[in-house]
Image (spheres, rainbow, N blue to C red):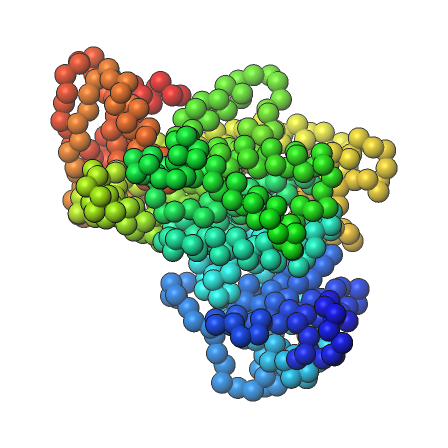
Length: 561
């Protein structure tokens, strides 16, 4: 019964226990003895079509009353709480009730009093509640993190690896996965960043899942490529210092020296994450991969994470536009890199509450860098001066120049990739299957394990390619971008709505400065632009929202299209 060698029986004495109910396997892992900050719940994991479920992953997602929530408490006894009728899974209080009920079950498990019937009923219900939320565009990762005791990345990563059957497919030991993702969370908390932390990593990982699932891209990829995507998303900012690459270069940090001033932090994120795997077999989730799979996954992960360096942004967009003009198939690593890059800068395309909170966090991180720059006698980097940064205008610029064009190119890319798959699947009746590297082998047993809803095996992903709707996908992000832009414009109109910047005609050096200004971590821009007015003299003009509307007149924008 116990996964460890302990001879003692009962839930109170075992560090972990595994049991089965109606063919489903459940694992319960107790808190470590003497932990200074005990987790609010024991951990739960389930296999097969029942997606991973751990403690408070089901608590409070989607509820918008407060930004910060403590652990939900019901003064009644566990017996009284568990006797309540369960609300429908899509009801407003479903998450709160699920969280409370799971905590009651944990208390009963610790006393050895849990009813198998109650356990099964509540786990199944909680799973259904979770599944109704994790596939949404504006997933509330902040609430998840609050409810889970600052473990959002752990729960999201485990959940998605289970949904895509990655754990089973690549024989990943659950204990190694738990150890690895907890080590990731420690690394993300190393510098106590307001923005580049485990919540951001969890958000990007969930966004990658949404993009794969809802656009039909999942049908284009093998299991290994899906694994690489989720892995890259989870580690893409590991041990981020909360400062920009340019700050590392200007201060001659050890990391900048090590990586020769090129993609300084992105190189570190990948290298440090792989070092975790290599130095400790207890957390090596890639242990059972074949040599070929290991090399392929690593090559994909390295390319994807390095492409999150914002200094590569314009070249990446330009290259993909060129790919879209060619009749040849799109290069997979380049396509996956664009998908991760888009997920990384996606918060302006989420609902306002999420976007505004992310913006506030990012600016605070910038300001902390500005404080360091002031102490060191360095000039302020763009958006790092607490006294002069204009939030609304910078966000309008970021949306107009970076986010909206990126999503547009991504949508065009996805349509070119997935449309032939829809046409191919429609007459064959295989719309419920996802493509796999094994599909060229004439054996049903070799096909992908991820099927459409209703399959008896695999996960409960609703990934039927016949359900893909490009128009709906585009309208989802486009509507949020439009709403957020209008709200920033309204805020700009109420406050200080203009700042003065110097624009110089025919100066490539200034273009270079602007590109440098939007380094990896500065996803909000202060505009320095090259105006195509035909005059070589410097001009000083107000940087208003009207200017952004006329950005097609900026020569540097034309240059990088």
